[in-house]
Image (cartoon, rainbow, N blue to C red; front, side):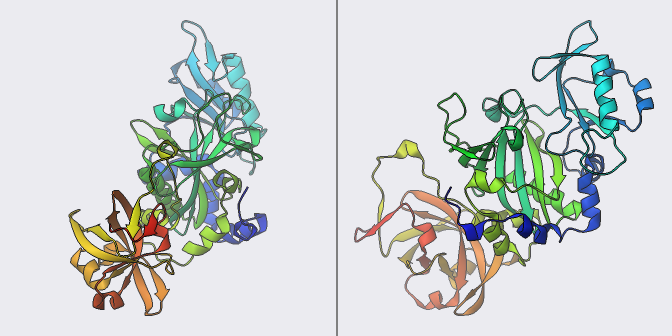
Length: 427
């Protein structure tokens, strides 16, 4: 692993952030039933609830034959996948159901599992134990082929209304078809800007480059509906009142991202899956003024983009640009404008003149990502789309008045010239 120790968030460090969550948010997170009710009230997609068991007497009024298959049985106050049964189909003309591992279950088996949940066998907290029966969300077709029988999910860590880190959790045979790293599932880190997978671990220890028993690489997979996933995670955090939390989501091909669970004490293994530390990312967004979910996602995609190299292009010539390249920048109507730029390797983030930002229609409150300290004082950081050579990128640029007086209106920092060779060749 190449994570810098100073960037890692440990258990003690995590407490500093979980302590920021109000008590009402924690109560919601402790109960899947409360979470589901809150999400429904706020029009945030989640699995349909078929039945709630509060006492053994409820077994007398349920008819398992009428529950639409597939369905899931789970404790209302469980964690780490404990006590979850996935029922995939019903045997025709018989009172038998088949779970996701191919085992046949009778009505008595379903009843007994409900009683075990009500006895608190799988509950993590509380003394008022309930069992839920809900819709099973089928895996998205683009992810289904990666998983062993179960449904992959997406874990997104949200802090201060900004999604700071994410991973896909892929069920394996070892994890008994559950997307749980403790039981041997695969965790795959995801680039926040593109939604492309970047690194993988099996369980919480072993780095992997390929999915088990295949030649399929764990990196380079595009997660479908990526921006929507991040926005739904932030919206859920906001309506629940969480300052810091983990959102677990399924991706339904037609219904889109659906919240499975909100966790006020998310695990730390997401750092292993991403080969990156949470601590540094949390520090970078602390105190930022975030207007809404869309704004929070824009900040995340500007701050936490990784460098992803398509290995299919390995061996191709690396493009060469001059120290003073001509680039194209796009206005708020997506129309390109040609302008001169200067490469400034002493600068990490690129800069744009205030006059050009205004001309492009990007210098208003809707375009503001955050404010950053520069020599000139506190200056805006805005999102800009530009084209260098044949590569089009979205990036965050600081707005500087000084560049109004120079012949070049953009200074390209190190972040935006990665992947190029800088030389005397005219671009």
